[in-house]
Image (cartoon, rainbow, N blue to C red):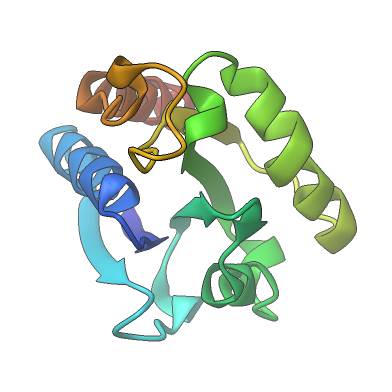
Length: 153
């Protein structure tokens, strides 16, 4: 399955997760391209699966990431989306409900999987020291394994 893993990041958490997801899917036999949306605007037409990930800064999702959701061919693709954020540290589902699901509804998208992973919080905003770097690639690895299994069944 030809797969695009596209991400937007400021602090690096989404890049870590995207790389983990891409590596996991490659290990499962997927043909994967990894693209940083700050650097390139990918043409999704040649892909079967699009995995799109973003972070949040100041309670906003990055505009360049939203553009991939607006692509004219996105509804014809299998889609999985993920978010890395400080909000996902303690309540991943709340982060999905607050930021990802409203966008999926607005654009009429029905992803086969939605993930929410803990991100990085600037020191001055962290309520607990362990929140400053809560990135856990193993969570993304497990999510990617479940995604691969879902696509194979």
